[in-house]
Image (cartoon, rainbow, N blue to C red):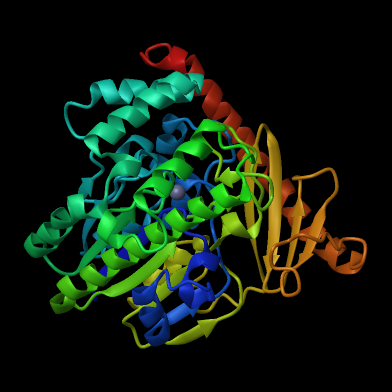
Length: 437
Ligand SMILES: [Zn+2]
């Protein structure tokens, strides 16, 4: 069985990767991998935000339909599900992960099936965990600030440059029995976009800090000038190039192990195109199911399969795809992206109790639940989704609306179960955190 390396680049949108047509050369290494490997041109996230998308990518099923970012709900749900790491582990794989993102940590149950799981939450972090829980409880600016300050000082989470933990990865590989499944999530591409000096190509020290600070100070609202926005994009593009450098070094260092690489992102980031920046979440900012958030890069490299797949695939197809490329039967309910035959995929999210669903085809996208009117975009002619053509193509819109509505109806039992889960957690008096949930 082949070794497998899964690299998740947090918050990288497809249209900012040069192999996906971006005008800047942000991803020279990924470009080479794309030329020699397999590229999914229409890969769609399994959710907006890391926990929702990555739970989908590891289990083949959408994350719980709730907008309560409560780690307990996530852990409970992981308990019920089979995960990719768990299945590979049973097949005899050594499984390891290095994940400097609390939202994909053991705190959320992402360690299930991993024999080695480095999420940097180790011992001595009780204080930090309390701060973290307070954020979920209060969503307050002060606790958010304290958390960021701690992270900044300790160079943790979004402030962890990959060079800081790189050797932990290669150390694990060296002492691990083959075959192995290794997952690495890079936070370098997540806001704030901070890049070490020698990797800066489009931004400078001052413009990088100033633009990141500015966005934070306007509370992530759409209040940046065109110049400030461009400076922020410069820093973001540099951060992608810095993450690309990680992949370059990893491929060189793991050469003897000849692993299959799967490189992807969990979701994108907004830069004001539709009135929002980043991807919402902690501060309950409304975001949309637009391309900047849901269209992600996805490459499979170092297998016999080469070329481009234009049909839409979802990250929900990822576990079966990985089973497929290592020649194993899949135990996951969603199909392999190599043989899905999809003409459309779904993505859904929930915000303030409102379900939003998008049906994404290769050239068209339908969205319901997001605005007062449903939306239909012709992605070929209007890739930035500026012109709602729902009235001009009412037959197509009707078909796609039926798909979305059938899906929403099918979700009702699950939605009810999630509500019961949340109530159960809230009523659990023996739990010392019960009041905080
Ligand atoms: Zn993320």
